[in-house]
Amino acid sequence: MSISLERLQSNALRELAIILRNDTKNKKLSDVTVTEVRITRDLSYMTIFYVFYQGDEKTYQELLENSKGYLRSELAKKLKARKMPELIFKRDTSLDYGNHIDDLLIEIHNKEKELEKNQK
Figure 1 (cartoon, rainbow, N blue to C red):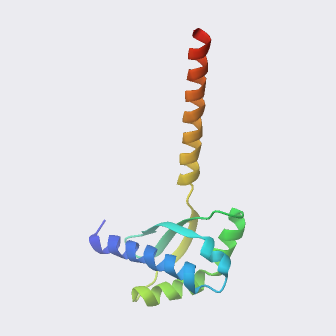
Figure 2: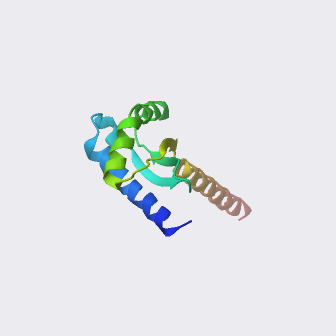
C-alpha cells in the first residue's frame, strides 16, 4: 500500500470521527466510533468500520446509510478530494470477537482450577 493511500485513510478516519461527533444533525450518530477506514487502490470505495455502544446494529446501519450523501460531501470538503470514493459502512466485530475469546479463556481457566481442586 502506498504512503499516500495510508495517509488518505488516516485523514479520512480522523475527519469522519470529527464529522460524526460534531457536525451531523442526528445526534445519535455521535455515538458511532469509527475504528478503521480502508480505501481501494483505485479510490472507488471507502469501507468504514464502526462500533457503537448502545442500541441495535440495524438502527445505526440505517442512520449511516441515510447520512451517506452528507458524510461523503463533508469528507470531500475536508480532505480536499477531487474524487470521493463510494462509502460502505460495516460494523467492526473485532471487539465482539475479542470479548468472546476472553470469555472462553476465563471458562477454560475456571475449569482447570476446578479440576485441580477435585484432584486434591
